[in-house]
Image 1: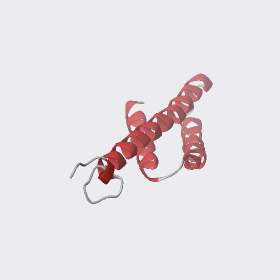
Image 2: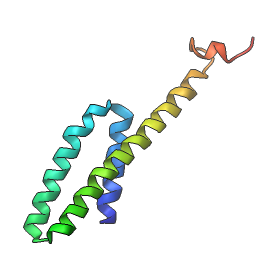
Image 3: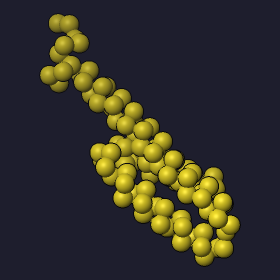
Length: 93
């Protein structure tokens, strides 16, 4: 379960860096369908499958939030560059 969690957080972070929030709906849906099929094939108990689905959906969202913070930090650092119009407000001549 740890491996799935790490993969979901990284996937969410990549989505957060690049896309808007609406990309979470199909990505979580696709991940949940895949996990449900995997749980069915393995013959997992229903509570274990439900827990796995909840962890997958939650970690993708947490990763997306982390990606948004990273994107904001990158854009903030880019705004402080001297050549950018936004950076001129912060630099004194």
